[in-house]
View 1 (cartoon, rainbow, N blue to C red):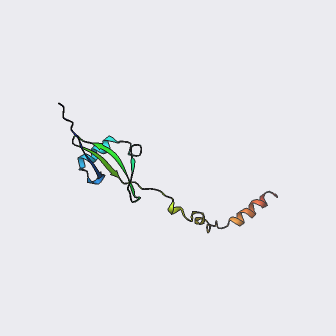
View 2 (cartoon, rainbow, N blue to C red):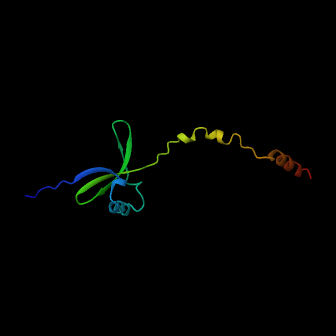
View 3 (tube, one colour):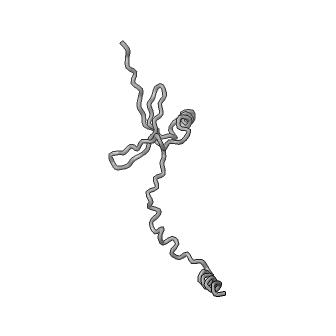
Length: 102
């Protein structure tokens, strides 16, 4: 009979891996993690992203820090340029109109 060997399964942060394991993960995903990341939703509504990483003994889900651009900083972006004036713009416009008359 063949005995089925079950790997230990762990979720861990990238920074908790050894330096060698971190290098292996980087080598495994040389173009970055965006195409292999999976979002894990927690019951409280929080979430995190993971990438798979396998060793002979352990099957890891490695947490990857991801900056989410939720657009919250864009509030008031329309007002950003509201006070922006080009000094002398009115005079330049008047000068341009005068050139046609010559």
